[in-house]
Image (cartoon, rainbow, N blue to C red; front, side, top):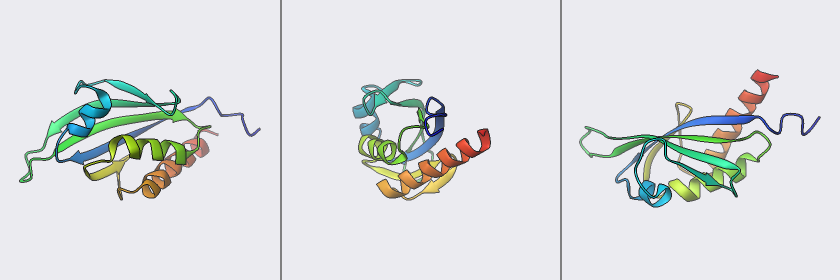
Length: 123
């Protein structure tokens, strides 16, 4: 039963606020909506949904991403890969609409919570 749900894919909505789009350009190669990259030897997909310049005083950018991975992949691996790829220069992050601290541990915990909720609601 352990591998019964290993092929199920979880999609996680992530919104980040950044000073500049430099890190996004570095990771994705260009700023283009629906641009997708693979992490963790192709086991994790990160899709750029949109980028917006905030009209706030600080002029930061809001970037919307979707992180998709198999339920069989450890949240720690996914969280660490996401943190390494995107988290340079992040001011704020929300995972599935919930603000999270910008640390590998907090991101991993948030992903694990989403993963657990998804797996328990489906089965």
